[in-house]
Image 1: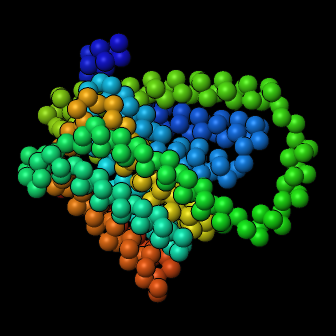
Image 2: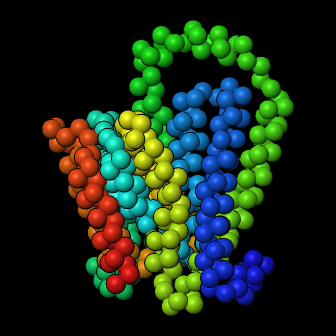
Image 3: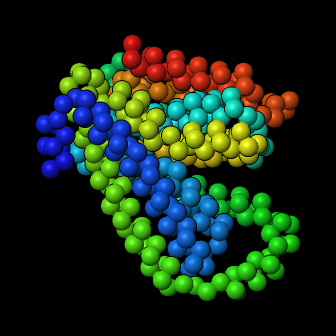
Amino acid sequence: MIDNFISSQSSFLVVVVLLLALALVVFSADKLIDGAVIVSAELGIPRIVVGATVISLGTTLPELATSIVAVAQGSSDLAVGNATGSVITNTTLVLGAGALFGSIPVLRETASKLRIFTIVMILLIGLCLLDNGISSFSVGGLLPQWAGILLLAVVPVYLFMMFKGSSRLKTSHSSSSEDGAVADDGGRSKSIRLIAVNLCVIIVFAALLAFGSDAVVSSASTLAARAGLSEVLIASTIIALGTSLPELVTTINAARKGRGDLAVGNVLGANILNMTLVLGYSATFNPGGVGIARDIFTTHFPVMVAIVAIFSYFVYNTRKHSISRIEGMGLVVLYVVYLTSLII
């Protein structure tokens, strides 16, 4: 029904619908996660578990919701372009812009996430090359259905590793504050009403998220068809930027307040989930796997390799402890070059 409505509107109104739908997706995902965190806390689920699962998955919820709808509507290029475009947007524009407004320290703990990111990226590129080999750079490739299942299998392993890593970090700090926390928790009544209200919040915003995602995919597909542009281009630019706006705003604000220390790790974590959860779902639930457009091979994958090289320098250079303003500008320039190469 929404497809018919959008396709009957002028191109200007379709653009307006796309922007409003993106805002709805981002807002709904944020509220849904807020509700899930409150319910988890009221049920007594440890914060460390919530942080390693609910909040981590929440960072990729807009991309995942959009990709689910895209696969259901047969627009697999939108799903793939959104996932890979978000990876690049997060690690170039988001972190680069953050560094322009303040310090983005690079923690030593980031090394483990960078290693996982590198392994997953190599695995993903290798799986995509299986169908057509090196000729994929000229004709495109395929991420098979079994490969999607393999990528999905990485998700619980990664979340478990995050959980274990968080557990190791909660050492003396947690033990010194445990008594107070127990007293606090003991004084809080597990309010059935609060749980019920937030369950309703989750249901309402999950429905709005689904509706917004449907509108995003429909309007993006309509614009691509009318303008003669590829769905990969629309997904990699407008949709990827739209779904990355929360991370962009959060990173800039954190950097300005001197709290940008976790930005690099959080962005790399979101990228890992984009490549495993979002692309894994897209390939698993698309009969025969998901097609990988030539643009992904010629533009997205090379930029992702460049990102690994850049962040290896940040993480393993013992004289580097943060991303400077000049380096942040370099990341933003890399994003502009990436966009330009897509358009040209």
